[in-house]
Length: 328
Length: 222
Image (cartoon, rainbow over all chains, first blue to last red; front, side, top):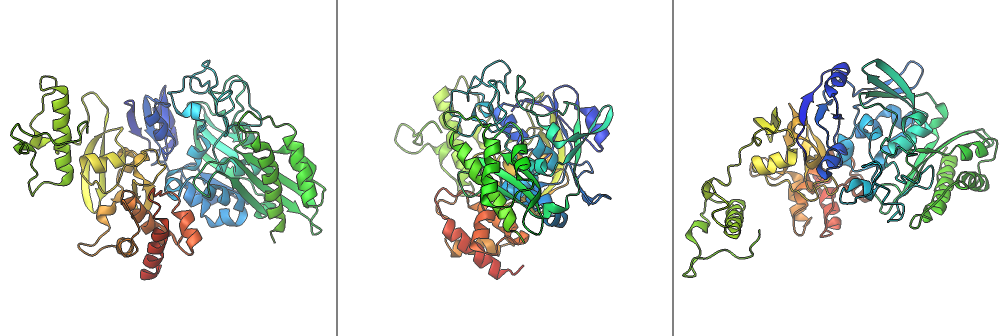
């Protein structure tokens, strides 16, 4: 690991001012320290933000919930407010990583996770436009089983590995950040980026901005929600495809509103807007779910080793929506 | 270790400098052998050893010019005030500097769970955590679970149910299981399997690990 200078910050403004060029904020460290061991990340300075007072999970006056950026994944997943009002988020968190990692990983750090693309994660591979802009994409013609089917570019076909972020996309969360010029809010859909010609940039956060909280807007029908994750083994693996599904049904099981987001399929949590639009006004049954999934997947594009993801995504959407419909 | 055999003197007797005294641990002995083998392989002119007997006293400080961080923390009830290379992981501090070698380095990337310890009562992967992040923390490792000669109920249950084969993953499994019971995530075989998912066992002792955890749960009702 490259040497770096280390400091601890006591308040968010101090953390931002300590960062300097080539600095990184250190939260749980579960991804950053791993990437530093790999030589992918080489920060000159780490500003340890673990002592900042940002670990609270609290109800907002509007009926939403604010997740402090330093709330640990395990504490968010286990919180009564989250389990009762946003079960999709609790399920997504528990589906991610292991109990040990969830005790370390933070809300803010989870949003900043970098891709698990093999060609990015191991500098022994010379080609990766995300790690080394202009070097090419090793995955495009390489082993691309885990890669994207939506929103990718010729420069990058990596996927975002977060489960939590898929639920947050469906919940239309708001990311609160603090920078040298003060605070701002970022809509969840605007937080992560598609690769385009700048795959080195995962998010629209600037280098000197610190995530302070994530706000969950009130969404009463989110009590009927579910996160379904499909992976190579029963637990402790990244998603091949995952679906966060939320349905608002009337008494006759007609769909009043739907939220569907997908993981493992794109450079950012993928909001399946076409599926959502198709569902509104339909009866909540398998035929409707299948047609709605098809509307989204008509735009999917696969590679040599990940064509299975298109059919897998279709079935995962249908099963997630069926599970939500069956909820009391 | 570059050499598979212990170097011998010309008369075929083991080199006296390498014999293991009763006071030595296996680990210290292996360290000496490794250092000597390396020295023999490289040649005496390229490597000056400061005397083999000091090989086990690695200083808990950094190389010159490398940034360091002062940290105070408690490990198994003992207060430590340290100045570490800022890059030092909790696992490397435990193993390489404090000689608490119960916590194991499996993958060193948070994927296997062999390094699991308890930080303020919660299980974490010590390989992905910097010592600097643990200012003021209370760390418990496998060495700190027993009460004198009285094994922790989870330790006793792992022995009773043969919850291991080679034993390398066992300290991490046991620390993880201690936290699992406290979290109340051991209410069925499936729940135990899911919530022990962060601890891999390449020998495949999983059925016995599940049996041990169930017994420990019954021995210590939550």
